[in-house]
Image (cartoon, rainbow, N blue to C red):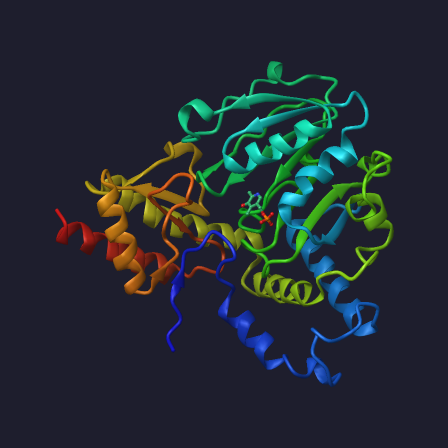
Length: 360
Ligand SMILES: *Cc1c(COP(=O)(O)O)cnc(C)c1O
């Protein structure tokens, strides 16, 4: 059976080489006579897998030694609560930049835990851009400032980080994880669900500066206490072993394919192909202002709901699947993560051109 081009926002495509390798190793991992799915998380074999994944991630993202890398469960959404519980412990204040659906959800969760302010938002623009983030919007005594770097639903990305002075910056990078180089030292914490760009669902990766740890609120559940997780090398309880193994294979694939600089080059090229088409089309148009456009999630619309539905239906029949926009915004969205080949975007653009010709 031919594989489709899957434009889903997550779970999303994995590199075919990774799937093949996992298949080859499924029954017998490296001669140990068992599958990674079956082995103890305390075994020597698994220890090499999780340590290997961490080492590769550190190498690819250039993560300094004073940052901990945690492999957790619960998804990015669980961190929406864990973050205030762990870090909103000085003034009890936190400032949130609301630039789309995910930062808004994180904000709403954080409100339960303290004095939380929307420091900047592009809600009035329907999140078609990221907001202006003036230093004066941020409270100097806040415990942290929160951003969602790449808004998966609305398709915008924060390219210019806010100047938060000494206040640590925390960023959700779920949908831009490993898509391009990032300066980890600018952040107190980076985190993301793995199912967009790193692995199957079930794994959340947190990268946290060490000095941030150890000040969780007393009532913080053990499973959400980053310090406890760090002290136990992510093995306080059973971690998502098989997903961590696939994550390691993806990281190996990234390294073999030139690392994050090369990935960025490829991703920019893919995104440009699609955005150039949108900018020249009379039927389709992108919904985000050019300067804030994500290179991972590309929302677009026609001016008719009927045409949108027809397009989604016919694209699906042509093997271009999961192109429907998020239920909250409608239209279409093409998620073109690392594992989406250039040929996939080419096929989409060709199909859009044919659709436009046939329907106008
Ligand atoms: C998908 C996504 C989430 C939610 O992730 P879960 O792992 O499903 O909780 C949060 N933030 C961003 C930016 C996302 O893309």
